[in-house]
Image (cartoon, rainbow, N blue to C red):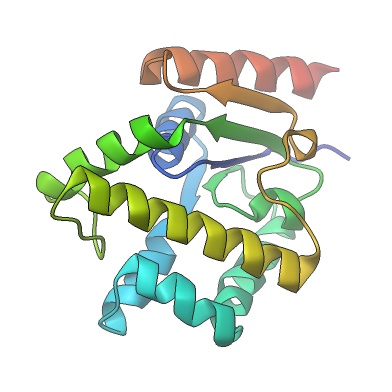
Length: 187
């Protein structure tokens, strides 16, 4: 049975949170970001997001804490938009979106957000440093999710819709998600 839940996953820097917030606002749904929760836990522990990813490879309770929350959300009747790398896995009856972006553009976006103070618990003194951090985080997440659940969180076949955000601005991405979601709901 289809649920009134949209899960948005994607590459680092692809605009998951911005897209999820805008889609939720347009639909009047609640928004949740597991990335924000992960960053909050990292800040509470005095760790960067990259350090938190490496720590999570060993301390499985970190992912289990976030995943348990997502599983609980799946049992609610709330209308939700969730940006999360793994929500699609825990919410199989959701409309599943993946936002893709090449690593160079992602690093440029993330570096700009770090410089403007818009990224909590993430650091980088140069574009090269941010690119390296993104690559390490991606490798860590791929390893963790495969080890924990036997899944590839970047496999396009896991999703109902895949959008490359490099050439699409936020307004276009949001409109594409909304249109595809309405089609999915009515099918």
